Structures are given as structure tokens and as C-alpha cells.
Amino acid sequence: MKDQLINLFTAFETVQFGKSFPLDYCLPVYHCVSDENLPHIKHVIQYKNIRQFEEDIDCFSKHFQWVNWQEFKDFTSGSFKPKKKIALLTFDDGFREFYDIVAPILERKGIYACNFINPAFIDNKEIMFRCKASLLIEDLKIEKSIDPEIYRILSLDSQAAKETLKKEILKITYQKKDILDVLAEKLNVDFQSYLQEHKPYLSTEQLRNLTSRGFGISSHSWDHPKFGALSLEQQMESIHKTFAYLKENGFLYDTFAFPFTDFGVKNDFFEELFKNKEIYCSFGAAGIKLDSVKKNFQRIPMEMGESAERILKKEIAYFRLKKLMNKNTIVRK
Ligand SMILES: [Zn+2]
Image 1 (cartoon, rainbow, N blue to C red):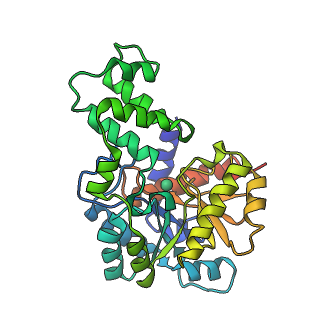
Image 2 (image 1 turned 90 degrees about the vertical axis):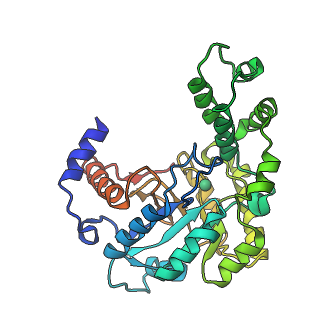
Image 3 (image 1 turned 135 degrees about the horizontal axis):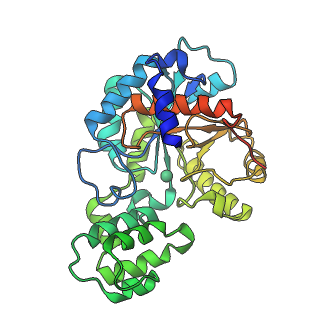
């Protein structure tokens, strides 16, 4: 029903995003761009290939004025007057493709981007639990017979289909992430050798290089927990540890992008976060939405299996629909 309504609204949308876009800023978020098959990401993120990414970027360029981090801050604090509505390009998770593929494309087009990283994974010391899930699912495809222990660990019937196994693995949370290591042992998947062989994450040296070329590197928490499921104490520990790392290394320590979603994150966290006057704002990824916390800006996820043009049209339609019901602002308690 929701999808049908959105599609109906989308059909009436013109392609003049500059005019119809309901906010005066547009904040797309990506993770990765690659023409290759990446087993550690493919089952958890629908990343785009190079051609699709370039088409997206050209679509944004047509309707918006790209800004860098300083301009974004100046704009949102009222001291920068753009000619068009602005767009700030963001990436999350610090994958290597940002250095190898994305940065050269953006330099050619003269576009800035900021990558929100998890220090725990930089230099390929560790791999994020969702990437572990993706690797396990990729391995399941080639397993002829599955160890009954696997079913037991996941509390599944030993007759369960591979598809059910896959779903259960994808449901494993940050709090239960150790299960992924147990499963890996049973499936003979070695995360450490995958890290060493494929180097999925950026290195400290690459982060420094990107900074010297004008790109932004900032906080996505220490190791990618869902913040809504943490205590205030755990939330702040992850924040402080990451900010110390960013400051020490000369990266951007005045912002933070929530891993996954900021759904369920309450006012007490934001009050605590902004006690640090060096922090300018934070970012969620709920699409085109307003937030009762004025310094928390919502970004638009771009890896939904559709083009930027289609995603923007849908998002604009959805925002209007929500506005009719007075539901286009996230209200926190
Ligand atoms: Zn992330």
C-alpha cells in the first residue's frame, strides 16, 4: 500500500528537483562503488557500479550545487549563500574503493566528499560484523553439505533451507556478533586471511592522502554498533574514542554519522554529544526528513537498487505524503 501510494505520487513529480526538492540541502550517502563482485559487501549493500555512480553524480550536478564540508557548515549557519540548492556528498564505512575508484572520479568532476569511517577497521585490523555475515552467506552458496552444528547454533531445524539460514545470519546483531565467528569456524571461512588478501578497508596512509587531496574523513563510531540499542554510556564511549582518534590523526572531528540508523536514539544522547562544543552536527540516513534535533541532518541512502533520479523522485513524493499527515519530522523523546 505504501509503495503504491509513493509510486502514484512519483508519477506526478517533475524532473525539476531544484524547484520541487522540499529542503534546501540534499545529502546523498553511499558506501561503495565498484564494477567488481565484492563478497564482503554484496549481501548487505546494493552498491552501484562505476557507470551507475557517474550517472547519479551527473543527475545531482544538474539540479544542485555541490559543497564541501566548510561550505555546508557556513550554509547551515547562514553565512554562505549558494546559487542553487546545495548537495553534500557523503560515504560511510571507509571502504578501499573510496580511494581506488571514487576519489579519482570526483577529482575529475571537481566534487568534494566526506567519508565517515570506523577506526576499528582502518588498516584492515578487523572486519565489520555485517561484512562477516555477507562473507558467510557467500560461502554458504558453495557448501555442499552443511554442518548440523550450524543449524543448532542458529536454533534452526536441521531441515531448514539455505534461504532460511541466510535470513538468520543477516539478523545477527552487533550484540551477538560473536556468533558470526563461531559460524565462520564451522564453515571454514577465515576473516583474517580475507582481510589480508583483499584489504577491504582504507589504510591510515590512504586516509592521510585523501585528506591532503581535500576530502573529508570523519566519525562513524568506533566499530559500527546500532546506536539505538546501546546505553548512553556505551554510545558516548564509542563517540569519545573515535573523536580522540580523528583529532590525533588530523581528520575532521566536528561531525558524526550514525552507523545504520539513528532510529530510537533519544534526546539525552544528543544533549551529551553537543556538550562538546567542537561538534557541529550529526547525520542520520532516514531519507528526506526533518528532525526535532535541529543539528541532526538526515541523509538519503542511494544504494536501493535504483537510479538517483528515481530515488529522489520517490523521496520527494514520500516527503509530501508524510507532510500531509504531519509526519515528516522525526520527533525524539
Ligand atoms: Zn555504516
